Amino acid sequence: RSYGDDIGDKTSIYTMLRTNKGYRGLTHPMREVEVDGKTKYLPNFKYRYFTEDIPMGLVVTRGIAELAGVPTPHMDDVILWCQEMLGKEYIVDGKLVGKDLHSTRAPQHYGFTNLDDFMEVNHYLDGPEVKTVSETAQVDPSTPVTAQ
Image 1 (cartoon, rainbow, N blue to C red):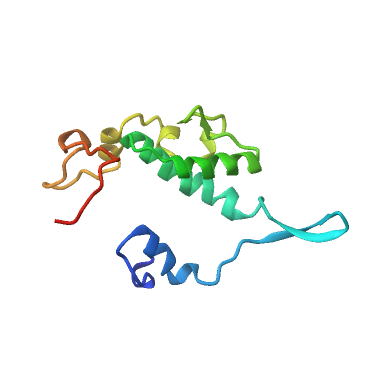
Image 2: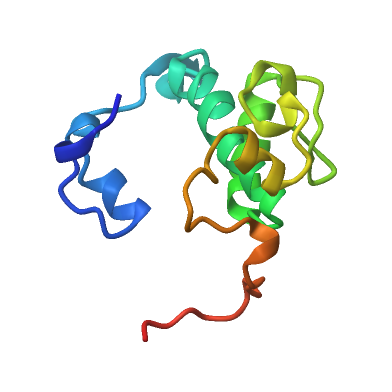
């Protein structure tokens, strides 16, 4: 589904997620547990936010970043924590090569090892003005980007 007009502010991924009407009111399901005679709540790790959104969303984004050579330390932390909670393995030694990669839609699951091939095969390069990654200047991710 495309959210189109459901997104109030399209200036960044952050604002798109925060202003998307489709996400309004969503909360994470919890389960009750008894700890030291007190009722507490833990996330339900079997809910789709973990079982679907991690392998079909976050791991895919992480896979594309890996192809592009972009470090994702915070994303890696989230995936590593989630894979532990789910009993899954996606990231091993900083790479998407885990035994459960086959259950994701990450480009690596389909054998992609570089961004140019991924872009070409998926027709993201169709059109006269699109350049491949190798044709564009490489940007040092530690260099701040400023508006001109």
